[in-house]
Image (cartoon, rainbow, N blue to C red; front, side):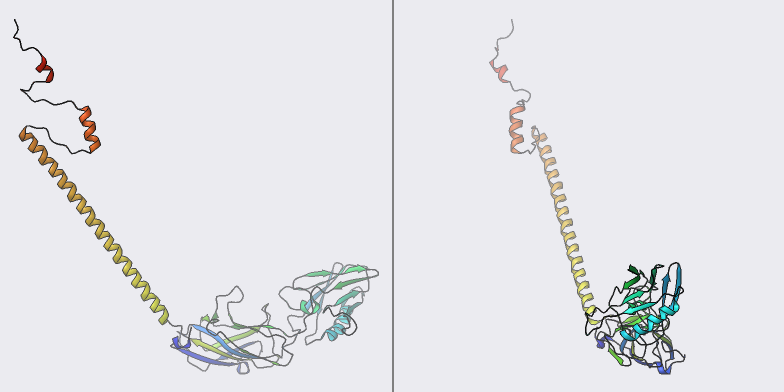
Length: 362
């Protein structure tokens, strides 16, 4: 689609700093512009998002420590971490939370003297009870431990201790998948994503930097609008739908509203071609029907004439005293000649009668 096909459009500049509400991940604004009802499509043109959100955020910082039949809730402090700051923070946190006095240690290979696997090795000082980690579903907290969301991972006995290695490579980068939601957006997406205006992928964004995004396919990614009004609500989430708190950083969005063209010129041309083809097809079918009807009429006339000629032959033969002549095929004529006896009229003598004696009786 080209911009030249759009008759009506309006560009909105959204600044979360001018919001009516006090949160940074869900912001409600009153748009100082007239929005007509026939703006039926919307699309994100560009976005500027500060990487002021943390690697571990409130709402996505809960996991569970399992000791025997006991479940202990572990709340990880919100903030940014490196491998080593996480290692020195979480080990003592697990130890202090243990209900059985177990000591937990986190090991990470020295990248200068050992092979770098990008994974942790967790140790528990006792084998008295089975120990494990449980991570909630739809939550990214497991990524910093090296495990999938919604899984339970148990330690294995290794001599006098228990150990558990990370299943996945650790992730200590800020959220790389950012979903921008809008209350007026009605997209053809799977459940849970129907109000997503756009999804932004930011690879390896450093903490406290800025994500600058420009949509390369504005019209291809456009979605339908619904309940469009001057009060608009936007929110920013991760791929699980958990809110991303920008901690006071302003989010700037450039949004396009437009009225979709009713019939692009190319579509009109295609419609004209289709109509022409349909008309020619109908004319050809009509001409064919006319020819078939004429052919049938001629055959009917010929049949009628043939019947009249046969009737006239019958009448003439009766007047002349002869049997009617019947037209047959050559094969039928030969068969008739062989099988049908000779006919004689009154007063004529048969061959047998000609050979008999004509002597009058005594």
